[in-house]
Length: 107
Image (cartoon, rainbow, N blue to C red; front, side, top):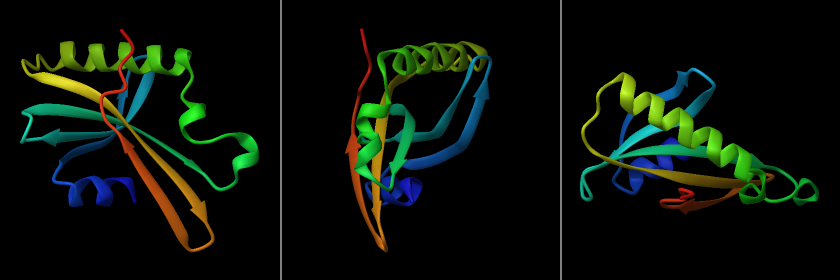
């Protein structure tokens, strides 16, 4: 669902479920307009009693993602700009609300 949404937004799919030491990246996309690799964390919730999808990306999780992305960039010798995006999905029966947050990196 997240991949389809991002492709409709113009991003190009490269890979899903990238495994790197210490973590996993849900999607690797490319934004050709901005000439960036886009690492995407996808979070889905069906009920709000456990918090929103956005709230589930804790500072610890963001730091783990940042380390995983750095390792991936180093392992493949990428020489390009990149960013971390979040796709938050709330499922309610047959309906889905998708929100795309660009460049959620912690400094």
